Amino acid sequence: MGTFAIGRRQLLAATGAAGLLAAASSAIGESAAAWRDRKRYATVLSERMAYVEIGTGKPIVFLHGNPTSSYLWRNIIPHVQHLGRCIAPDLIGMGDSAKLPNAGPGTYGYTTHRRYVFELLGTLGVERDITFVIHDWGSALGFDYASHHPDAIRGLAYSEAILSIPNAGPPPSTGGLFDRFQTKEGEHLVLEENLFVEQLLLGGLKYYLTAADETEYRRPYPTPTSRWPTLQWPRELPAYDHANAQIAQVYSAWLAGSTGVPKLFLHALPGAILANPVMLKFVRTFPNQKEVTLYGPHFVQEVSSDAYGRALAEWIESLG
Image 1: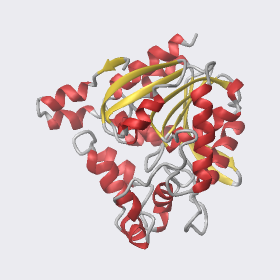
Image 2: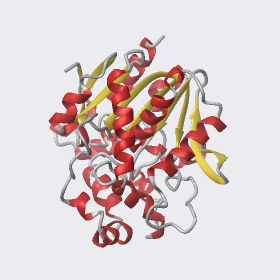
Image 3: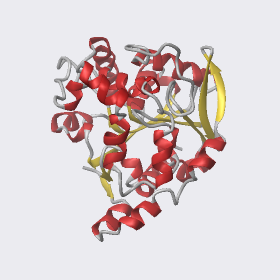
Image 4: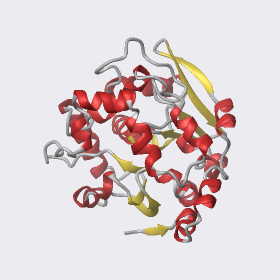
């Protein structure tokens, strides 16, 4: 299974010290206000994209997923900022990046996000010796980029990734809530009730976030229209979108054969996406890979940030 790096918050949780959990959450990184003040902006495809940049040297690019932002990495980057040029974008329509006009079904599709992220990397001069640190839909973006630019990749560190087993056909529907997201009922739940943020993100992290953290995660989505990215992402999953299923098949097949690219699998336990035993077995076939198990759910960065950061730093240092 690889190394097991228990997070300090797991130890606190075992003691029932909920107040300490909340207080510890932002102790490593910066306050929400300080993180916002760090943001820089670039014009990408005529829209403004926000990103945080810390450190110098070879690029280390942090890509978040749904419904988070670069804020997800605030407690991770301090562990590695001495090891390279850390860049953490806000995906388009998320965080402090611009909202696209006339938002509605399809506005924030995967290929749209891909265009903006790839263009941003070019704008910032990120073209070689790239280490990706990726999570959720950020994993799809990073793997997709890597599969098309393998010579530009120094390493891939990932957790709770979106993958598809080659030649196995589209993955089955996840059922339950994610099936409902495909419907008008799902639109109401996400756009009107802000369910993806309130329940799937904040609801599962109530003892690990401060009030300021919760406010920061809510801040990009004050209105139903602003929440379209958080609804479009579950509709983009390979189980529901044939084109994205094909994209995931291509980069997953590349990962399974990419002997030359070092990988770090940050295995969240119990996790969510990669709690599927079939998918977990597939991930463990990737060559040139180290696995570290971290205590935490899908958003493991908020639960075991110390362990995540230390494991990441150790691995990046090993890349030479």
